[in-house]
Image (cartoon, rainbow, N blue to C red; front, side, top):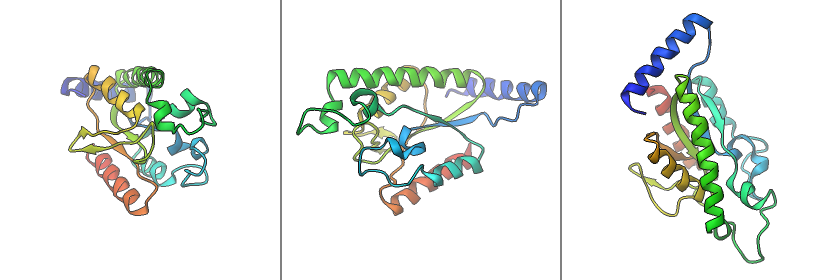
Length: 194
């Protein structure tokens, strides 16, 4: 977010709190669907019974709202990830129709993000998924996206760039306790500094 937008957002936030006694923090992150609902993960991929409690607890601790993005795999292939036999989810999703679906999802997500920002909120980050996720993997190095990030994450990054919205995109690697701890530590630092 550019400095002017940030300042205008803070002025709007102050005005809203004074006039309406609004208790919102006006800070939020976007998260992939399965962080808040493990039931949407592909069979065998769930790491938690219901949701990623550590991440939700951290957002609660720092008063950061959570915007849940739709699952690209379910949007394109259906809940059971229906596809031709022998075809991986990644191959099925990384087609012109699959990319179009992810592009439309990205546009819808960023439209909503812009609406929230226009109300004075600060957009802190996009939180993606595990390195093997066909739609939501995040492979970053010094804020440069590397391939093969997930199809949705790639489309989101492009849409954010088109609209000049600058936020970190970070994977939440919950398949490994040590990596998950690193990601939670990164997120806590981001929250503490914003």
